[in-house]
Length: 199
Image (cartoon, rainbow, N blue to C red):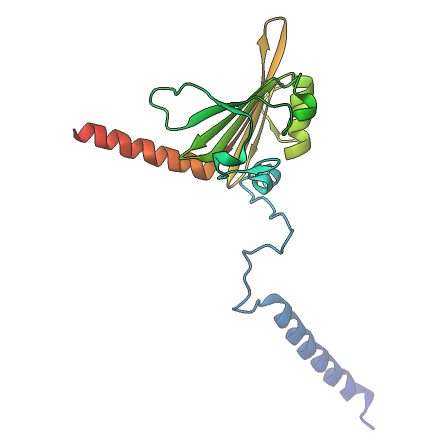
């Protein structure tokens, strides 16, 4: 039988060896592990520079309509006259269903913007007592800028909510846009300007 004074160092050495092996296997990821891909059905956590962007990135559009969706997926739309110099086409929703269907009397105006036939921006105007709670329900509390402005900044999408005096009361405005398509629009506008200057 081994003396007690010799068995303690042996047991301690064995314990340290096993701990090192276990910790090493836990802390070093396999080279084939893809750390950037989230598990199916899991919303990626917002990066530190975008702490209020998780939900706006998760939706990447509005409920039922992700950014990039074609115009054909949007019923009951009326094309508005084009704005000179603007690359997007603007449509006004004329139905009573959709995102604000149950509140269509309070959220009267809904604009959908398309770049090269792809959905890139949404804007709603209406009663702030309805619009603001709907926005915070969808995107979370957001980052406040004063009493009448909230924003949600994600990696792929951005949303802003603001209120302004209108007539005898206040009007709310919610904007949601695709940062990817915003960058594409800026590149197209730059290319167009360069082509015009070259003539």
